[in-house]
Image 1 (cartoon, rainbow, N blue to C red):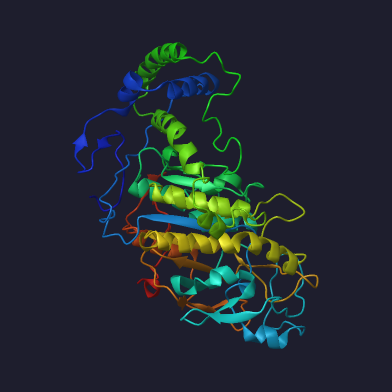
Image 2 (image 1 turned 180 degrees about the vertical axis):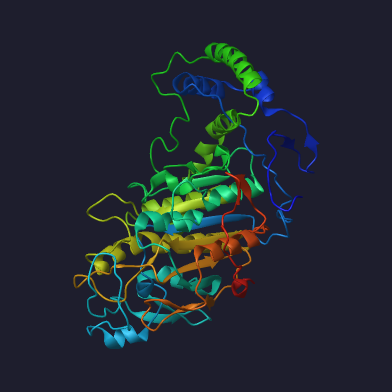
Length: 497
């Protein structure tokens, strides 16, 4: 193992004992491959004029050995609250806001807001109570998650470098406010490889109503090999994975036509490679269509929740219209995780204008947050409970986050403006100590006060639990050894079990 993790350009296949077999994937596919890869790649070659990407090897380290040290977790599910879920209305209890509600907000110094002047102090519309043996104060807005308080480690001093949704969402996913950098799921795919041969390593389940700011840019592979980008599955749609099956109108696609296409493509491929040996784009496309062929068999089964027990369906709220979508996606996330997907990202909220269908509650926090929390709360808690009952929580990290927080003062009387200076995330499972809180905001929940942390620290901690040293997982790009945590990141040891 070199000091940093870099993958060789030639793809190799590994057996369970990590015995290397020198099999060239390109030749294997073209000699023995199925028709789906040939037909789809033929179309792309004709349209784009490209023969694309030598992907990084999937190292598949021993499952308990991690990449650099013994792992506590094998997989991650990230629940992303798009639009900025309010910490002062969920998990960050402040008695001062109750006492001072309606009075002038005066924390000292200039108050910087995104789109408004600071209004009076606004207490949460929801009541607060202590929950679990840990006695954690949690709002009645998220009562189902409150029942899981003893499983969760709360991070109350998170900070963002931007108060604009797009850059801040990029930052929580990739560690950078600019586009073009690999997401955490892509880095984990690159570092650890797959746990399954018939499912992607990194899967994204977007909100059925649309995308968060930046859209698929949030799950890009950036400068990593393209094979590590997230595979998007639109759960609940009649065609959840685009172009997985030929359209009904394509009756002309037959076994014979596929064989002829492969014959022509083999010749084109060999000619292209002979002249462009260093071109690394072909392999990623080949692998994506290999995976598509596998998904034709595996996807219908993993996405079919009809065989889940009535009790499980009720747990996730599948049969309740208000929780059906997010519950369906959380249940599919569990099914993906137990079948070997490394990283699943589940989105709550879409950036699709008005009426708002995300957590960006500028106008009416009581209404908007109530709607969003009703959709998310029960399914998210069900995911933790279901993973625990199946023995999966002990090696699965559940990571709940948002792009930044919201202000303790009012905006327009009923809303809250953006607050990048402090917000709350939490982790559960996978070697995380439950029932603890790390860091704190000030008495207003306006700015981080004790142990301020950024996404870099959370990312370093998640990688550590997966058996990865965040400083050694690098990729050489434009003369720089890039990493998920850039030049930052400290493991949050206080929340490790």
